[in-house]
Length: 232
Ligand code: A5P
Image 1 (cartoon, rainbow, N blue to C red):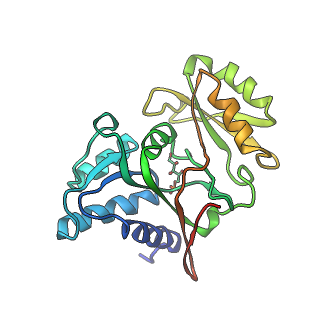
Image 2: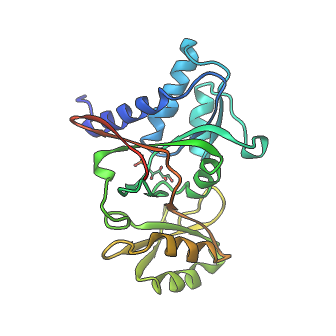
């Protein structure tokens, strides 16, 4: 089968991020098709003996299963007060290195894990870059299931069209038992910090996909090679 060029870009970005992982580190393990390659590479380096004494903190049940299958020792968030690094993908990245995440539904744990990381490496292909967040990707907002309609109305007041994410014939349920509203903004999100503050203040919003001021580096893979973006 011919290699998938997009998968190859994701793999290259993942390898560049895993190069920052050293023996003895506590590592946040992201979720998604790009983070998958990073987890695979950490497993391979452990098997070869190039890395030792790694503790991984997974951001989803999917990633936990993958990491277990590769023999990566895991810990829960409760067991640690910080992580040395975390590596994860993103759905959209702006020039400030702010992100939309949560396309894979793992946003709540991703944010909880990645907040504890001293360095957060975001790995993307060049198609994820955007002048303004929300232009290309709907913003995922994780809400308490019983309150989804009220939350959808409140979100619409911010100028977006929220849609309840569907799974197999029923609303999608996250690892935390919540639903997701995917919020499409016709012209992108004008003020990401104001929107994040408004969402953070709503008790029935359990997480949102705006990851602001969190990435240390964004590693971007394009056909011409790898570039690294830094905030500021
Ligand atoms: C998972 O909830 C997401 O935040 C992913 O990290 C993000 O959607 C990127 O996924 P891909 O690498 O599959 O595009």
